[in-house]
Image 1 (spheres, helix red, strand yellow):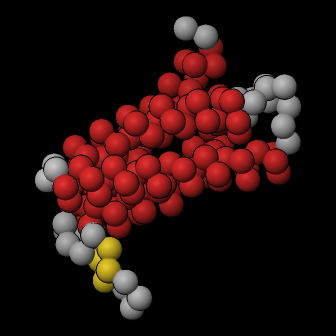
Image 2 (image 1 turned 30 degrees about the vertical axis):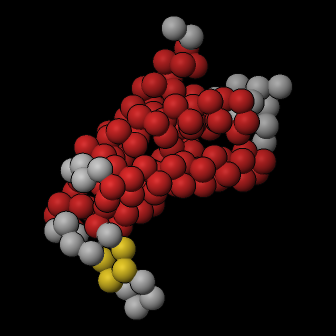
Length: 137
């Protein structure tokens, strides 16, 4: 296994465990599996929990990718961050779409849906980051 792939798996795996743990804690103990009402809109508990975990894991993921996984990239940080944000926006859309489908259409348990969604998003993120965000020229 190439060192970069190992580092991605280790850092991404740690960040994924953090993400799923924060999702579970938010879903189960903070939101109590209930809708989150704001003055402007109401969020389902699985989407609100996803957003709560995302706020933490987005910056952690960027710094791990930048300084541990893809440190050989010649692209400057100020160029990488916008690219990383584009990839993350795609990951947000995939998370939203698959969580909605798995939970609301298929009736799956939210945490299991999050785990399955994460598998899909991790594959998307790895290839996007390797060939777009942190591409070594």
